Image (cartoon, rainbow, N blue to C red):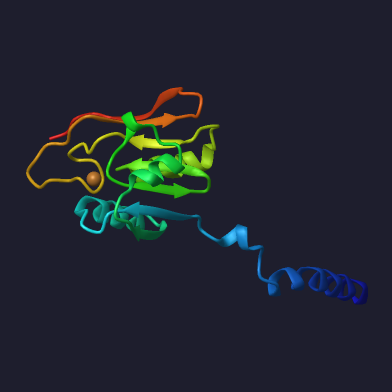
Length: 157
Ligand SMILES: [Cu+2]
């Protein structure tokens, strides 16, 4: 019995610091999405709200012009939309659904980022009441110019 008590004590001593010490910051900290948008963009604001609803921490930065950020984060012109987000080294251009960002962070493909080019009606933040969703693609793009459809969303009534 005594020996058992000792062992329990030893185990307790070994486990205790792990319980008391704060875990490494990267283990608990949710990745933050920084979003560059213009102050008057309503659909950009709604996309930010969508990300927050899906559990992301978002830092939204209002800028007079988003194109310098698009250039800085390597988003090609033909994939441009209305705002540029950055998370964990990836660029997020336009109305990318949160689910696709989560899958990106889990899979960590070698790529520059994701884009929903243009502003398709019905994508997150671009919902128009009483209007059907346009079909749209979330495009995974890389610095070597390669593109692939990360997720296709069909039109929906
Ligand atoms: Cu938009």
